[in-house]
Image: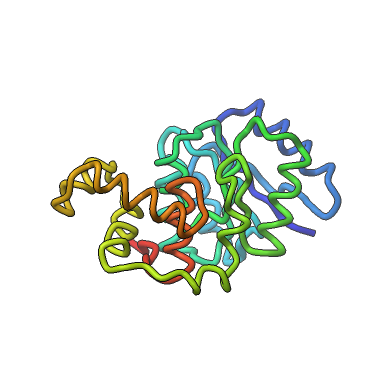
Length: 214
């Protein structure tokens, strides 16, 4: 039985989600909390981690991103799946950088949620097509390792994993925004991805960028 914890400050949504998950084969919600601080307090009460944590992003006291940072630093073995209405690219990238195993929007249907949870448990990750349409292709190691990047493309790729905007990256690399746009489009083509999220995931999987443990 996969033991699930829900971290969400919307009580009605959390209760409905619990009913849904408890009705799925081999899944059981063992408790739900309203923010990251409450999760940390519950985790401190036992040495056993839940099998899966469903983590909202926008919460009071301690947000999903802050919680993911804490989990990454203190419970790196924890499997967390972000579940949010926030579909901003920067938020998705940040959650993945800090160790989230996937990112699912709250308007997903129940079958998508079940598939996402199964993916995290069986494969260790889940990236929905809505988040990155080309992700399944970019996760093929043989294809990734065959890609050759020059020094400036590698430098740009590392900067792309930061929280800086493309304009700020251009300033940091002493290049024009137009040149940065060229690097971005070239990497999209080389890596066969369609978003900045795809660039970040490629960099993480290839060891080009290390997830921050702080």
